[in-house]
Image (tube, rainbow, N blue to C red; front, top):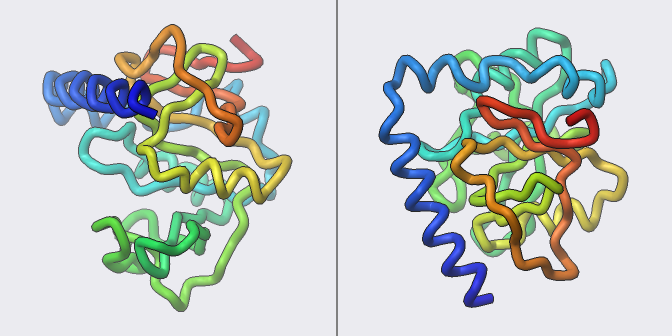
Length: 191
């Protein structure tokens, strides 16, 4: 666990420096739409699970708009409290975010009245990743626990290139990613 904590600290700093070095206009062009090979993994009627990115995470706003315009239902994480298990609820306004409220962990999330959904494809945030699809998350285990309870779901990471590492410590509860998208490369079964 200490090794993961040190890795998180180092990788968070590298991510923060990487994002700070990019101009806002360049950042707005990145992650504009999913790469074509990735779209082949996603069925037409799939429910798409996304996260609402923090300042240094790979952005998801354009992906939400893209999938919404293609007719997919979009789901974002929702927590009743910071001690609750992560669930997902429908996100119906990716252009204005009028259906989001302040939630646990200081994150915007769907209101309690939003319909609960179970994503078929889940885009996940990360601190670090390997080319083989291993992921280092924030440390709370929310995504690993959710994936453990929902077999057969496709998990895709979004990351900056600086977050790639050669190897990560693995634990039994860690769920590998099917693919990882960065601004310059796509890692996964099509690479």
